[in-house]
Length: 249
Image 1 (cartoon, rainbow, N blue to C red):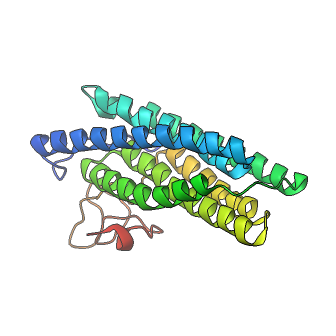
Image 2: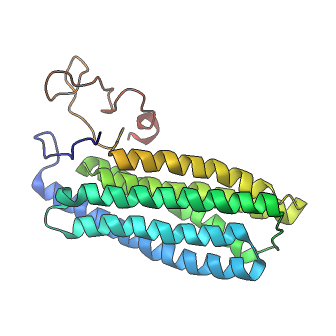
């Protein structure tokens, strides 16, 4: 059952602040799209030259991330972003599922076929850059999305964060393959990332925000909004959420 889209509550940011946050989300999405387009071109080209399935997959992942960021950009281009949120979440969910499916297929093919990729200095540099840049973009968008109350902006920030994990996997995979010739390390780690992508896709599809939006908390520790509201912690998170301690500032 889908969760209802968020409405504007008295506890939310005032209109002027909402405009600032929406503009910030648009800028962050534009930066993410620009970087991922460059990343895709470089990774796919370098992967083709080095016969690296991991690099080509990383480049195609960047293409999928662009679709996710574009969905959020489309949402916030309208006068009423909240009315477009459900469609944006669906697009983001499909991008997660597509990424998981591709990574799984290519990982199994690499394990079964035993394909050996050549050393790629460009791939190593690209993975290191993405590992440094993507967490910053993800954190900034997630923080703005939570304050604004946008589930889609938070979901897209998770897509960007997933790129960080893939960057780490790619960096380790290419490095281990170059140093020791252990070609199986990358596809094994990529399968773990695929499982994470499925989980995030399911949450985006349902509209789960977990810690996406701070809830109004009463003195008794229950979320304001009527009888039956679930308990939340000081960060405004529902039971079972573990992201607040690391993200709260």
